[in-house]
Image (cartoon, rainbow over all chains, first blue to last red; front, top):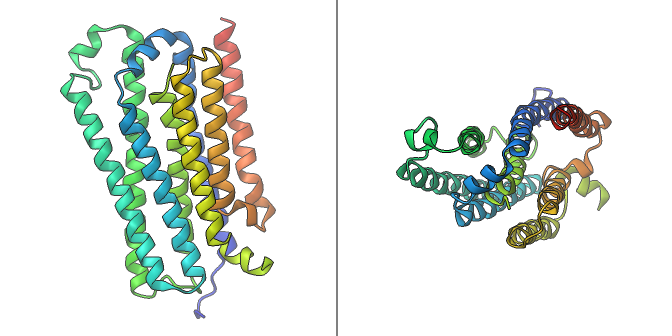
Length: 199
Length: 96
């Protein structure tokens, strides 16, 4: 037991409040998406054909699996199995990295085709496609930034775990990092069909 | 059992089942997008995404075992707020 009083319910409440602000942040972007898609549905469909469905599906599976491993890490810590906890955290970090690597290839492909915000090729096309790719880069970019932040947080938690500062008695940092990671997963669960699977 | 579940969330097998369900639903959403469903396609994609995120929030994020009512209510309140934003904006756009 630690000498300091730890208010785990309060810590959880604060994290959930923050996650709700994140939902509203992405919610605003989803609203923009909904309106523009309604106004330019044919062009949105046309533009979405440019996206690589395989990359999108692969990244969905990767992110869902890394959500599983972070849940298993928290589960292992509650059982006091520290080695398993750090192992699952390590696998989660690898999953997040893999997601960013795939995303990097995907964006690289778009850039190679002259598709990036403000590119001459894009601006020469129909307005709906400009809006689609603007939202695509904005939303997947903001999401990738969240993955990056999540990786940083999880890496710090892993370091603290190895130093005994995160333990069975004090799991709150790992639990909150896990909540953040799951939220990033939930946002991707909506981004994936809305950008990659438009019919 | 109940007390142990309260602290650590679900049993390990439950997490694996949820993971399997999430992967299966991902396959379903990709398969459904391959069909020509027209207007129903968006609704189907959103419904599947809603089921997937509910699974993540309830099981992976332990909301199912959350003891504090305040924390339990936060997500519904946020979603209702968002629904009002989206609903009102959409009626405006649709009727213009």
